[in-house]
Structure formats: structure tokens, C-alpha cells
Length: 266
View (cartoon, rainbow, N blue to C red):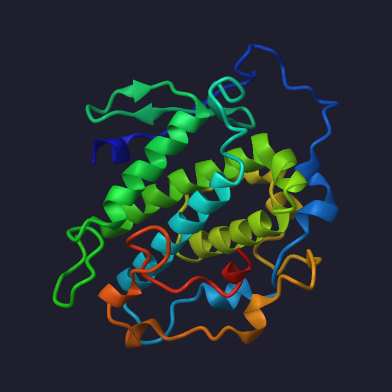
């Protein structure tokens, strides 16, 4: 799709209103008591590794559609606060993101518009049999890995925006543990398969779980409550034993894999 051809970003040094970022503004996403909070102690470094005898593209497809589902769900929890008035541009740190239309033309849009473009476009891709095949005998396209990288880039933009602009609301909803867990899992998966350009993730030094500086190691965590412990009885099944069509589950059609061990707390 044409929108997959764009870089999706443009660097800047000021806020959308032209003012310099307030250095004194308290950044709650940097507070250890919040950034270390996760809802599971699952070993994500082991969870993201390609299982033996599993096709790489199938593994990428399964996880990509699952991350799409959960990023979409995470954003929905704060979507009422992400308005065209509150978030006039899709900005993170000193970077402003732009969308690219069907003709490849750069389009300036509000954050909610950008997220809607992302979710609508990715939804079309993960339900397209020519891109994410679910029937046996159907091959993945030669461009599949590059498409997955583009999808991950745009999902990363959404997660980054939630941290940068809506962590306060996420904290008020007591969903910061969910956000951190999703973020850590997503970043480690992307790093395992080189799905994100280092330039994209460079800004994570200033936000995210523990500043994201320790993501290659297991970040110390504090549970958000004993009620959120669904992973203890969860068994991670072997994707090779599933029928591709049967793997479509969840709210978003095209979800090819069971929810990760931490997802049951939703």
C-alpha cells in the first residue's frame, strides 16, 4: 500500500504550539514506581524466540497480528482523551509524525486521525489473504518481512504517543502495568527480529519502562495486584499444531495466535 512507503516522521525541536517543552514538567513515565510496574513475571526474552520447527514468517504473522490487537485495545482505553484539540499533531518527544496518503503525499494530521489511519490500514493488511495467508498452501509474499517492519513501526508510534501524551490518564485508570507489559514484550520481539530501525527507538531513552534502557535484560517489576495473575494457569501452545483459520480469534479478525500469557487480565 502507498502509505507503507513513507518514513512517517519528521524531526522537530518545539511543541506543536511553537513553545519549547517545559523542562520542569513532571514526567510520570520516568518515575520508577510506575515504569517498573508490570502484570506478569513471564520471561519475555524467552517468549519472543522463534520456536523450533516453526516457520519464521508464520511466527512473525502470529505475533504481529496479536500486537496489533493489543495496541489497538490499549489505545482504546485512552482514546476519549486523545482528541483533535488535545493532540493537534502526532508528536512524541521532539518528533512529529506525518501520514502518507494513497498517492504517497505527506499529510499532516491530528494524533487521533493518525492512529485511525494506522489501525484501519493494518487491519486491512492482516485480514488480506494475499499478505497474511491463513489457508494451507498459500505462501507469504516476498515483501512480507518489510511489511511487518512497517506495521511494527506504526504500532510503535502509537505506543510512543500513549507514553508521551497519555501516561497520566493510563496511570489514573491503573492500566500502566498493562501498557508497560505490552511495551516490553513488543520491543523485545522487535529487537529479536530487527523489526524496528534503531532511529525509531532512540527516543525510548526518555520514556517507557525504566526509560527502556534495560529492555535487553529483564526489567525489575512490581505487580499491580494479586487479581492480575492469569498467566499462572496459562499454557503456551505450539503454533505448529493449530489450523491457520482457527487461529483467528479475539476482537480483531485476523488475530492468528492465542493471547500472550499476560493478556488475560484484560
